[in-house]
Image (cartoon, rainbow, N blue to C red; front, side, top):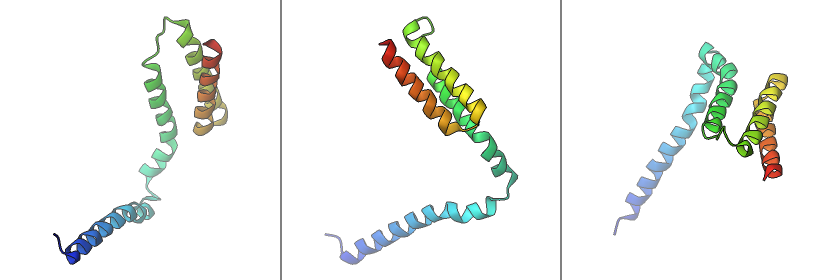
Length: 108
């Protein structure tokens, strides 16, 4: 059986490493706040995330079947239109998802 002191030391080392890894991003964030790269990512990432989500969603669509085409196209139109109007990625994604689910429920 392993000694209690050894187990306590192992737990302390694991806790210290976990705490350090979780605190490290916050320590580095203060140095990166004025970085032009972070400023660019702040403006480009919401659109980039939406493009990735749209590409992932549209890759599996059967463009020949109207049962899958109608919900997809209507949700895509709502998502793009709302994003161009409000410039709010969260509202666009939620509204597009809601329209997709609603139209899908009406079609089937």
